[in-house]
Image 1 (tube, one colour):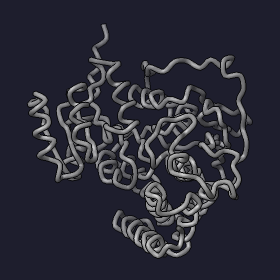
Image 2 (cartoon, rainbow, N blue to C red):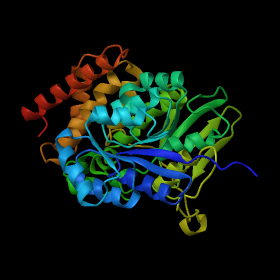
Image 3 (tube, one colour):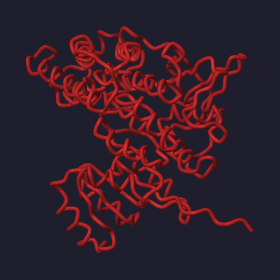
Amino acid sequence: MPAQAAVRRVAVVGATGSIGASALDVIARHPGRLEASVLAAGSRVEALVSLCRKHRPRHAVIADAARYAALRDGLREAGLDDIEAHAGDDALQELVAGDACDTVVAAIVGAAGLPSTLAAARAGKRLLLANKESLVLAGELLTAAAHEAGADIVPIDSEHNAIFQCLGAGSREPGAGSRDLRRIVLTASGGPFRGWTRERLRGVTPAQAVKHPKWSMGPKISVDSATLMNKGLEVIEAHHLFRLPGERIDVLVHPQSLVHSLVEFVDGSTLAQLGLPDMRTALAVGLGWPERIESGVAGLDLLAHGRLDFEAPDPEAFPCLRLAYQALAAGGTAPAIVNAANEVAVSSFLQGRIAFLGIPALVEDCLAAVAGGAAGSIDALLAADAAARDHANQRIAAGALA
């Protein structure tokens, strides 16, 4: 009789977000096999305590150090004295790098997720990477750290996870690339404004931009989908994950969001991964790999859906995709500059400080104005990130993009 597999202890970093909720749903379906041992959130103490009641982790972490007392007291009041409270980035990095977990779901949005993601990679953990900014900002450093420590990076973006599956997740080293690949094709839903002209986009409101037609996501990611910046960032991610140059990474708009990506080989064969638009599938691949485990997602009924459409993206109406390719070609700190400028731009748009078309305008301005350089260290990347944010904020304060 085969020995029972050890329980996989999972740290869910970004537990109160939509990806965190999906990860916890999959974990809860496999008691005795998967355990949410660490739950981490940014500042939402009440939401984190509520998750602790349900999933009973061993550790709870709030990134905002000023909220430590609220977390500690909230756990006590909930009768969860057996759950240890922690606060601050240092505590989070220690937990994801230590023996509290062997798997880390990295789902913090933005550059704030980089330190804990790097800590997990350097500790040789299985890293379920849903934080695209970590690869965009520091892809070379992150993949090098993972390779040196023997960490497995399993991408959780549906598109990269699809490529991971098409390359044979159980038989290839994650991120190893392949000489028999001709190209990869990332699919994009087109967001809520697919088919809109640039002129029509001038009046877009934040409420319209966060209403994605297919996916349930946070506001920042939803806006990135609406501008196609998410696809541009995914092109940069794919470059690092699969070791392909930008000219071998294509994008197609596919409004049904059923074909998540395609892989074309040198013999003319093309493999695609299809499934319903539900993040739990990709998370189940990461949590169970190299085995397949139940995700809670139904199978795909192609007869019910009827058709699959594909079209080219519109670079005039959605220039963010072009800007991401431009940053990838420039290399060095250019992707970090684009990422930082985009974060500031999206936040300002959601606050009503700039227009929707001000997002790509600000990114392009920063890419042209902020000096790039080599991406040889975290300090260099963070300096570029800070410089881009400073420049972006100055432009917004001056009313240049209002």
